[in-house]
Length: 237
Image (cartoon, rainbow, N blue to C red; front, side, top):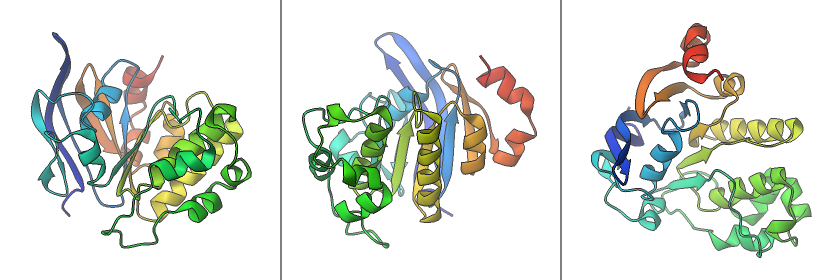
């Protein structure tokens, strides 16, 4: 099966400091993969390259077989990629509903039911309850729901979540994991970055461990469960 997203030999730098050396991974249609690693190892930098927020020095990023690493961010988004950024970054002076409609996009290529306000509100009922509140008036968990809902309103084919549950209360974390599992059942491809390895193993199909800007291990959830030394070496604190 042809992957929806293919990343090959990705290299990138911040000024003279090289951050990514040879990142390669792919995401198939309907597949959930993770980028694992400690802070500062290159996971978020990889995400920035995927969305054109950091120039790619060499290597390639392809979506549905077409190179996108030379495109600006808004054109990459039109290829079906949506980002739930670290720190959520909702618009603080817009209401919940205004945040959602600000990024709404019809996807003519969508084969399933499209995402619109009513569907997002059904998916996250708390957002409907708070639809008139400003983004700045929401709790961290509500902001994360809003960030996910905002991304879904673009009707993506691949959802990328950078620190999916960071800083959230346990009950909200569970709700986010439930939501991501439901999206997987609907066939939405995902890249998930998070520190909760146990939850990720229950959700994802494959994992890519990044250490100092390189993929040092990859495998399925079953393979990762059978390699506790990998978790200890590359993910332990």
